[in-house]
Image 1: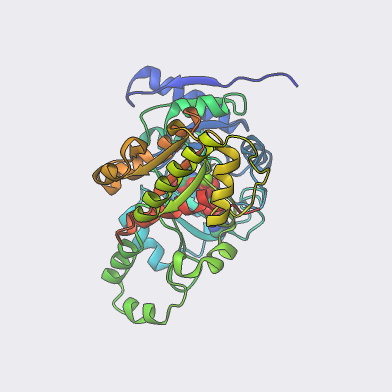
Image 2 (image 1 turned 90 degrees about the vertical axis):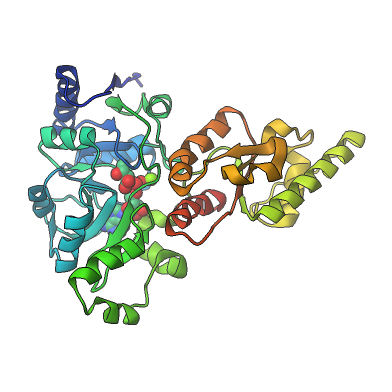
Length: 390
Ligand code: TXA
Ligand code: MG
């Protein structure tokens, strides 16, 4: 097949003539059924005309994404919302006013005009108005809503740095627009607005408490209704969320390295164990067993894994990703994700990809969940990177 390379442009400031020209080119490509990778405040998106079934299919093909995993439709004004969605509740209106433009995706019933290719066959549609001005200008200029999943190959970590989009996707799309690293660094909060009370399907920067607070300011009965709500949030009811949000059941965010999400003491213990094994292996290098098991998270498996794959385990093949304050516990293995939740979210996907560049084989990601909702949203991603769903 003929090789096809994307047009690649960088945008630094929004209001120059050159920028407007790049945005016009991107808008034209989208309107004509092509694909464009562009920055948003959460992660980079891979966009195409949401109203064109052939264009949507190109997204699935470029990402290698299963066709039952629906896309988020990005809009730049409320007319576009009314074009694609119906039955917009009073609660939804409150959330729109409070959180749009921004990192909140809402699920509504879809209108006929949205092809089932865009919604993975569902009768509902996910909609978000990004705050990133490059993204909004492209949508506005294209004049059509843009379906855009995260710009990574399906199953890989999301892309938050333009250069990684070029590296991974330049032969798979028509255009790539580079800009600053994504400001937030994890994908938008997804909330289902088709049920009587909103249900968070994917946690993100806008937390469940933010949503509850916004709605109850406007609706005094909301708290009373909340008490009856069973499906309160993702982690408590993962099975229900998987049924509702097809994307959540797939393996996600995985770098080449095996990822283990563990508490501090367990990481320290395993590093010790590793050192011992390493010394033993040095004494007795022969006979590694040829056994690779599927459940990496079990300890037995972990032992097998290090004995087979890491015959000569070197420091360079293992990293501990942790917060700045805890680096001291892991010595030379430590890589700092940042000091606070905002920095950690912003750096996480970029660092997972950097580990691949450095050919790291094992990542211990410290589970430093402190109960804050944003850190749990980060850990939600890592839990998925660590799972191996066949
Ligand atoms: O921040 C973001 O949301 C980024 C940027 C590019 O905007 N996009 C993004 O898209 O993360 P994607 O495709 O990687 O994730 C979309 C998620 C999936 O978990 C999918 O299952 C869910 O949204 N989703 C989409 N449409 C849905 C629907 N109609 N019902 C339930 N879940 C839906
Ligand atoms: Mg994604």
